[in-house]
Each structure stands twice: as C-alpha cells, then as structure tokens.
Length: 235
Picture 1: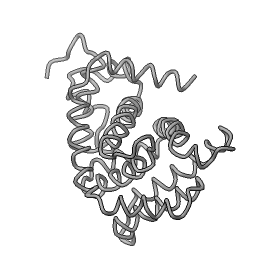
Picture 2 (picture 1 turned 135 degrees about the vertical axis):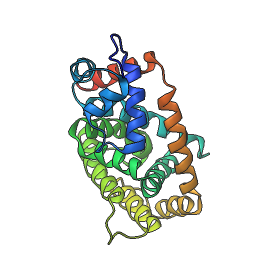
Picture 3 (picture 1 turned 90 degrees about the vertical axis):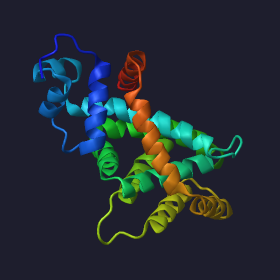
Picture 4 (picture 1 turned 120 degrees about the horizontal axis):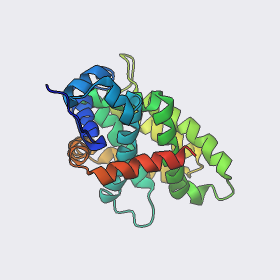
C-alpha cells in the first residue's frame, strides 16, 4: 500500500475499529494499524502517541453509546437503576459471546488511561443512579465506591474455567454493587429478577453490532469532541 501524505484522526480511528473488532486489541500492533491506514509509524504517533490513546477515544465513545442504548431498553421513568443493571448484564453477555469484545473490555479495565475514563464516566452515572440511596455521601465516597465497583465489573468480565455461569455472575455482581450503594434488599431483588427475565444476551449482540456501525460511521467532529472531552478530564 502506498504511503499517504495526508491522513485524518477519523481515518485512523475507523481503521483501528476494524482491526480491534476483528483481531482484538492485544493482537493489533501499531505496525499493523499503520499498514492498514497506509502511513508510517512516525506519522501515527504524531496523531496518537500509543495504541492506548486510540483506545481511549473508543472507550469514551462506548461509555456514552452504551448508556444511551440501555435507557432506550428500559422504561423506568426518572429512575435509571434498571438501565444501570442492564448495562453490566449486556457487557458480560457481549464478552461471553465475542472474544474480541472481551479483549476490548478487559484491556479497557486494565490500562490506566482507559480505566480512568471508565471510572470518571461511571462516577457521574452512579451519582445519578444511586444518589437517592446515598444522600449523605461526599464526592470522595462516591469515588472510593467506584474504585471497588470497577473491580467487581472486571472480575465479572474476566472468566476462567472455574467461573460460574453467566446468570450467576451477573446476579452476584449486581447484588454486590447495589449493596455497596445501600439499595434496599427488596429493590435489589426486584431489579435483578427483571434483568434475568430479560433477553439481555440478544440485547448485548445488538449493542455490539450497533456500536461497530456507530464507530465506523462517526465523523471527524465527533472524534475531536471525544478527544477534547478526554483532555478536559485529564486536567
């Protein structure tokens, strides 16, 4: 492939999306991405210093996209608790069915730069979702709880031959998280029962397919907005 003189961040993100979701994050090297785009490694680092910087943008996009889709699948009115529970269930389902997406999620929870994005996004979300149960909590307490929650989420996504079946993992994670935020037992049981009665595996597949399309069809302006959002969070 001939080397390109001009390249955009959008073209790099779109090429990375194709490779990440076909090969996985771990198997996508900088040289492979450069070959896909048709640029040198030096040109790539001018736009994105490392592969993790590219992943940052996709994680920022995924956090926003997933939450919007979860709210569309629930009709809880002003309460977003069911949407929160469904989001985790679909993430586990996606990881269970798709090796590349498991790699995407696990890499996102493992790398410091992307984990920080997840925690920052989820911190704002948990204040919205659990605020009524934690009325006396400070920002520091919510941040401390989110550190624990991200660990629970990672452990639920990370499977071994000894891992429990998916329904049990989802139930256990949701119960632990809601208990941490002081959600009453009756409400915990009700939300978990609703999630397990939903076809969250099919919803997860749709989320995966739609996110791939969303990422592939995004615009240069949208990419710049996400990059600026990341910069602002890092200030």
